Image (cartoon, rainbow, N blue to C red; front, side, top):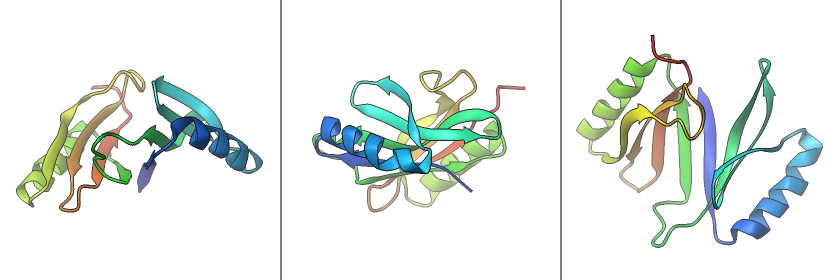
Length: 128
């Protein structure tokens, strides 16, 4: 199951304004901006307001044009995804671990696929 998707944009301020206007009729709004030049848009899902569509300023050089995050059942599954992706030829783009900048229970692991796309497995549950 997809958890969230991110796009790199060339002009962050222009894109943020565009998406704020374009997504509003769908009930999707800006819900998080955890760092400069990154914005998470979302809505209420199951009683929780959650960002699931992200934009971020394109890096120099850009890492990729896409970020896809897959929902993991638990932290062990995130660890297993990361290890399997590296064994299959992926490149480390962030070892599995807590990412409290997003929220206290966020645990993610990142790899670059053979084309340089940033693929993540994420668990939102706090540690056992």
